[in-house]
Amino acid sequence: MEQGILLRELNHRIDSGLASAINLVSAAAVRVEGAEAKRALSDVVELLHGHADVQQALAMPKGKALIDAATYIRMMGSAMRRSLLDRMNIRLALATESLPLEPERCRRLGLIVHGLVTNAAKHACFDARSGEITVKLTRIGTLVNCVILDNGSRSARGAEGRGLRISNDLAKGLGGRVEHGSGDEFTSVVVSFPLTEREWQATWTMVKRRIRRSKVSPSDASTPRRGGFPDRDSRPVATRLDPNPAQGAQAVSARPAADVLGKLLSPRHSMDVS
Image 1 (spheres, rainbow, N blue to C red):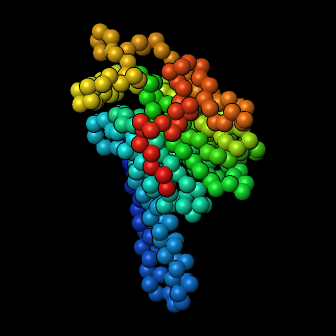
Image 2 (cartoon, one colour):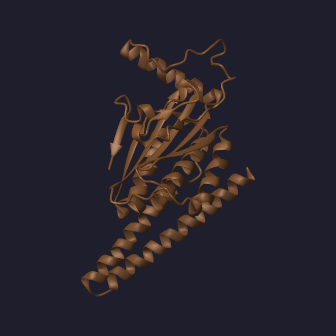
């Protein structure tokens, strides 16, 4: 409880600081003379609004109700486009399926995705290619896989080491792990973690509703055992990438169930490209 109070206080102070900066720069944009200066200050205001949106998306969630991770990540992605990616001419694609998570676990996933997308934008070497980053969130049974894939190489990784360590620590807090892969023209990070029993029960209820609507049993739904939860002995195993660039960014999974990148652009998942 004390940690939650401290985090909310920290978020409040950051929000207040961003709001003050936005007000000051907005006032300066009104007073300054010259069209070029006004445009420059207006651009700063837009940038600050983008960072405020990201901060709001990553704030401590209120209440105990489950949060749809797909909606959460899409909102955060929209804010990241505004604050960072559009200015770097990097396209962000989001392919997500509905996934109810407990509030704090959803926030942890959001922090991981934010950190990995930021690392990709800042450290990937796109050369002459147009920068593209794809985030895909999928579920196989009780295992969640979140893939952050970019089309840049990464010859020097030292500058991003701290950010990756933080993502690893956050993933451990979800009971999961992070694995990395790269080639001449792609770099990928796969975050895998298991659902809690509460999350699985909510997910299975959602799957059963879809079954009743479509009258077709989905191939990726694992029927729960007695007690409502599938095999808890399954350990989260992240995918690893085939290092052979001639084969493309294909996934080679330690288990068939964790094969994520092979279906990266599967039409059964919604795709938002900007």
